[in-house]
Image 1 (cartoon, one colour):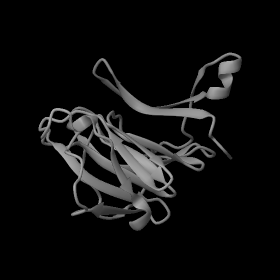
Image 2 (tube, one colour):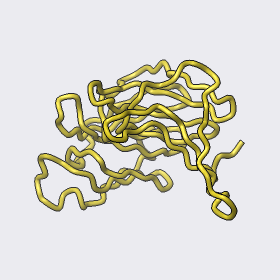
Image 3 (cartoon, helix red, strand yellow):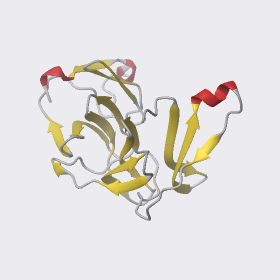
Image 4 (cartoon, one colour):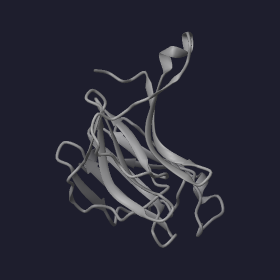
Amino acid sequence: MAHTSKFIVFGGQVDGQFFNDLWSFDLNSLRSRPQWELMEPTSPERPAQRMGHVCINHGDRIIIFGGSNGQYHYNDTWSFDLTTKKWSELTCIGFIPAPREGHAAALVDDVMYVFGGRGVDGKDLNDLAAFKLSNQRWYMFQNMGPAPIGRSGHAMASFGARVFVLGGESFTPIKPEETNYVHVLDTSTYL
């Protein structure tokens, strides 16, 4: 079942209130009567309310990781099956990244790459992790040469095997224009 025409949003924050609801917008409805649809889970299990997490789509499910509710930073990984409408917390193995918010993610094949964010101590992170969906294993990458400075609120995208990081904010920029650089990682040699 393809969900390529749907735009899906999970959670977030408005005026200090945090959410864990899931909304869907069918882009094809722009031709007629556009509207958002609340996707009610069929199971009681669901992620905690949060904002600053990442959410990617892979096949018939979405995956979320991390985020914060203002008091607590998360490093949990959840899956929502778009067909059965069931949430499940994934039992992950490997090097699970530290809790964070404001990080970014991009998908290459069945691997979700996660970069940066802001840690529990409020400091910007510049680590790169990868979550392989087929075996639910986290990988951490170190000593890969020059890396982007720590940042949060940035964008990440993929094209083919390449992952791009751009923008965001950093409390410790080496150069004022550092967050304007486009950083490219060729993932074809890693997983």
